[in-house]
Amino acid sequence: MPVEDTNRLSLLLYDGNDEDGINWHVDGSIYLGQRWAGILVLIERTKEDTAKLELQPNLVTTILPKSDIENSLVLFQGDHVRHRLKPMLEGEERIVLSLLFSDWPQRTRNIFLRRYQSRVNQAFYNNPNP
Ligand SMILES: [Fe+2]
Image (tube, protein in one colour):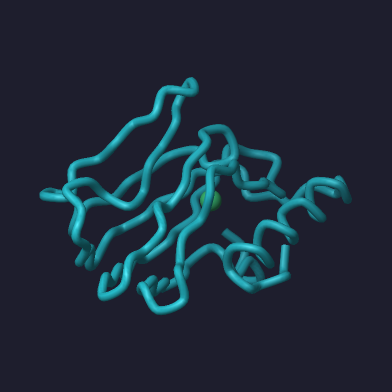
């Protein structure tokens, strides 16, 4: 991924203090090739039995067990597969390394795709860069 893409490698901390959580969505993509999101879960200290990250491939909700989620890499095409992060509860903590992969990381010139990605970045990561 290009160095300018601030989503290519992010260390993200979620805690229950500010009601972190991300509702169902698909990511944008500003690349001509496939865009794969990788979530390496470092810490998942929650009160639930299932992982906070849920995926919906083919609109079927897939729940991941929490027991094996730490040190696991969840790899999915976030611009095709709906996904969400269930709301964090008070006292919970989740730390992940978020990675981006593409087989052809050439940026599109499509202004609509770039604006959509910018809005997603602003909403979910407080980062307006596309
Ligand atoms: Fe996402």
